[in-house]
Length: 189
Image (tube, rainbow, N blue to C red):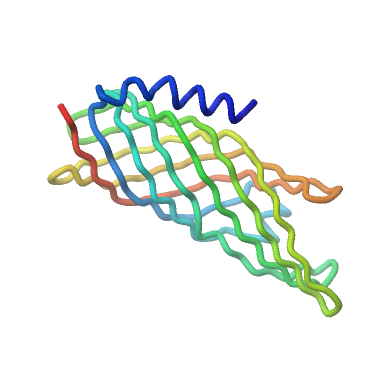
């Protein structure tokens, strides 16, 4: 069902491709902070980065495709004495609602995210790998500050309500992403 919603979302805007007002690309980097206390205590905050491509439909609307990576945390679980390494990556597609004011463009975004989790767990007796994936929504907002020749600086905050259940216990990975970066866009009209 979720795949069908994403497909319909893409198709509904694809006919406007020839009327697009512009394209953009950039990269953001920052910190992923988990909200739940036990997840935050075990995995902490970690650096992430997110390259993206943007199709600007018109002044007030854009479609953004981004990839999130960089989260790779090694930790020792005190309760059972096992070392584990958690790696999180994700793909996001978002509708970006823009409010242009000369060279400053505040925006809100909402979309669909698919995150992949890979955890390697090592102990004295065994080594095993856990892989899982989960789809969720992403919401956020930010601001672009225009520079010269289509380049801009970007600051953004996003939130994802994310829970996975690889075994019988649910793990809560909902959190905030605090990002800053640079981008470039060019207008067709």
